[in-house]
Image (cartoon, rainbow, N blue to C red; front, side, top):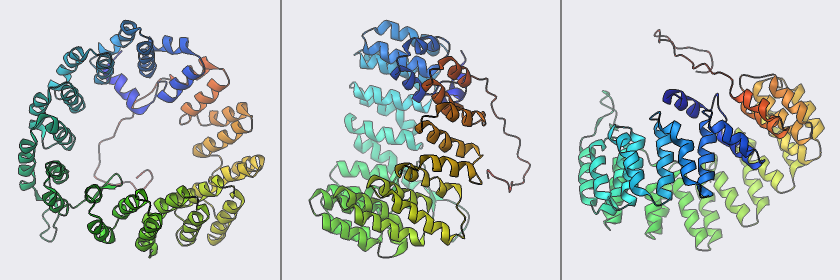
Length: 452
């Protein structure tokens, strides 16, 4: 076993049995195969087999399964072993195992190690390990977490304030107001500390200085205002925040308080223009569905997609049609979109027809239409065609479709083979030798061919 090879396979899920198929093998009772492959370098088999042995009380056997992987000095293997040890109440062994990786500078190992120390009463030590990496957003986030339990909030705040003050212009353009800050999340982390210190006004003032207001669909200022019942301020902020995440938080608060009409009104006010509704149509429709107003939810999305048939909005609408027994109306809506596009229907929209047709008892027609589609012989269409054939009980045909595109469909095809009971064929397919791609030296020109 080699750490670089293990890492490449685990990151790319190539040349190995991926986690979903390991779970499928165990679900179907193929424990012996998983155990066998765990001893042959299949990391995800080893991980699940070790966990299973641990749950059964066979702890030393579980550690033995991981031992060859840990011996390569590959951090994910050491982390898995440390997690088992901690879960069994052997925290000191977990700490001793993890320390060398953290001290060697692996940032993932350092964060894991710091949190491990903090969970076991050693937050101060964790803080001191992290402080030198304050310019790294990932380490800084961890430092702020451990500072709370270490009672070192003010020390963490001082480090972050220094980073905020050290921000520099992002470029040489004198008209550019953007700043480059390291870590980029310094303002948000500093606001987190001030909030938990009870210095709410400072936290709010800080968050109003951010250049990026939303991360992963959440707005920290909106969440803070909601937590502290500052609804008037939240309403004002929601009216000005472009992405719709603040109004979503306002609607969540109103719904939690039983004011469903107020939550709906907040969304509709924000979405009074097509561009505004584009941001909040999905959470509004979800709110309406939660309160058994599916017809209104469908109408919100139907009206919006008549003007802007973005595939993700149309997909949400088609899902609503299917979930509420209105699949034929969903098909009619897709027909209308197709007509507006001069009878052209690219794959992204066409594939939304397939579950609707299946719901209407038109599975065979869906299969035939897929085969006849201009993109029906592509590798991505093969996924959908294979799924439909499998639903129709034609699993051998489903496998044959995927076999036509061996370079890209190995995982899904292996799943079909497992379901057919052809375990060894599935494993051989997944373990085909892989060639790592090489990146050619840049010649100074940009390609105009996809992928860009």
